[in-house]
Image (cartoon, rainbow, N blue to C red; front, side, top):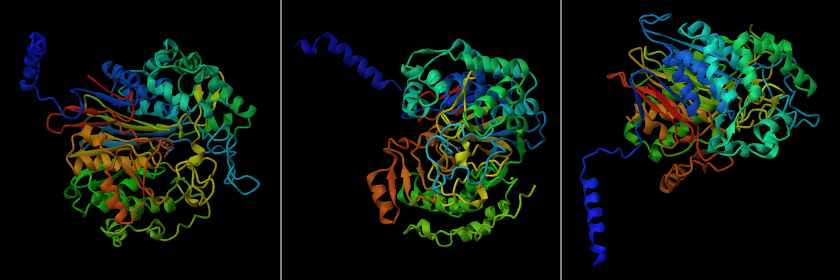
Length: 591
Ligand code: DON
């Protein structure tokens, strides 16, 4: 009888009370709401750094710069001073520097090839690509000229609010490096995983591997060299990185270890300002990244190919939808391989690739029942012919929206996780391995399995072709979605699926980010899907159509991308932050 005694009765009452209380508990995670401004990034301390600047009266650009610099300290996996990227900026209608319809612009701070770079610099005497040290992926020869510091500085100077200074936006990063931060489980595990890359380089081994003792979850991690570098930048301004002591240290270390970067390369690095690409999808405007990223063109091509189909009626997880998306991806990535490169060095046929009539023709051989083999997808505009002479052309994404409606979508990178593995002695700066985004050899896949063409060959001063796709979705000139992702070529397909989830399937933004993703990039001719992402019968139905499929493994990470996204409710103006669950430390911080 004890079983039916008083404790049991009390528990029953509580259970019934809980069961009957009409609290609308969400079955799925809700986005983070903020009335004024929001920063969503891969690391909570970096998101907080952005909000600190917003609260000081800074705008979205000021906050983005502070977030980017803080990520270089707390997220060395991809945040950086020694890499590069793209910042897409929306200036709200009627605001400073804007017009009645608002203004969108791009700051391209992509790395460029050093003066000493040559087309075949990664091909060995045996005609094969060099592997390991000296290659396009590892060590001192793998780096392009870093653009991050110059890009952030230009963004702040031209499009910042003017209410906060360069020293103000550097401060949160400097503080995090000087005072230290608590190492997260994610950071500890990720550094351990990439220990084989970092260990051969003494400075990286000392800082990131603590000479073999490893950083553990919960450790207090102070980075004095990086703090000193940030303090120098704060004191002497951003040119210090390119002309001052930091530049001299980079050049000296490169010279000592057989690297290609010189002081002259650093001095001559220039940021480019570009006009974003604009396209439409089902009544929404898509504003996205132009060359030297392939992302915007491929994204708009895919939306153009999807537009005639009733995508929403297919169901967001049906085999029919995945089949259609895979076929569209295959065709866009075939064109990417053929025509895309730095527009300062090759003529990219942008208008022809985005012509609706062309995109309709491109899908003329599409069958809802049968996969088109990748080998049977030709480049849609005929073979690329390289112009005779130049005409004159691990990543992370964060999104920021401020109280005035300005927005920033920023994707920047060291390329691979922890870049080339090299840290410049005495500076705490990890260097990129962006040279691997060039075509090292036509027809030979790079580290993302991408087969690339002549248009993306190495030339001094040229920017390697990218897939980074920071993107806005607009309705009536106002931003309704800010998104982007890391993931090499999968970036473009991640962005496609997040936006389609919102527009075609009317998903709330957090569910649009959480939903499983697929990737098809022409070659290899296979659809990869996230672990647990597709049901067995969906996989079987796709195989029956002739698609090859592979579940992502531990080798390539079991998930695809990290789409740190913000939506703005057009009716209420409420900002909705959707951190991607694929990064444990991601956070939407708002006020
Ligand atoms: O620019 C690009 O396309 C590549 N360097 C991006 C690399 C990347 O996203 C790695 N992250 N997982």
